Length: 158
Image (cartoon, rainbow, N blue to C red; front, side, top):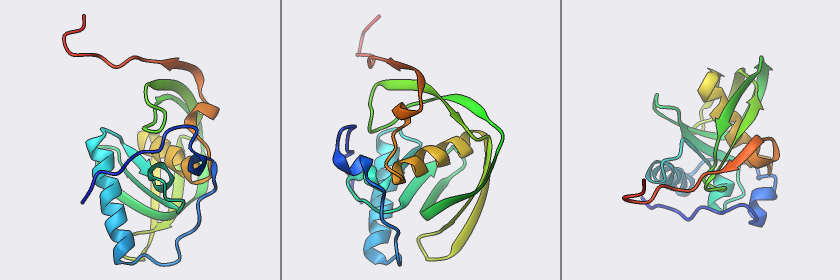
């Protein structure tokens, strides 16, 4: 497994609509494992393939209840509304309030080419929508209100 480089805002791959995956093979499963390792090592809660320079419809995420690996995710139902603070590994140091649907249903396939359906609400729904936005070429800063830059804390800073 490997920690991959994360593309930053301004990189063209982050503005592209990612290509659907036809079939998940061994090479793609390795990519998915590397994406998960990268997400965990960078303290993220989600990562989309375009963020590592791969324009394919793959996301990994973990809301604290375990790793989800989804290929070709598609929101099939949405309801309600929530506003919450978001950040992004591709836009380091920036945070803002983003309005999202509170409850969603997502259909996708897993890394073994099996169909999966996820009913999500709250934080999990937020992460899914954020990562699916990446697959459609959108960054959270396009939707955020009260966008702020927060400087990282340095060792010994008061």
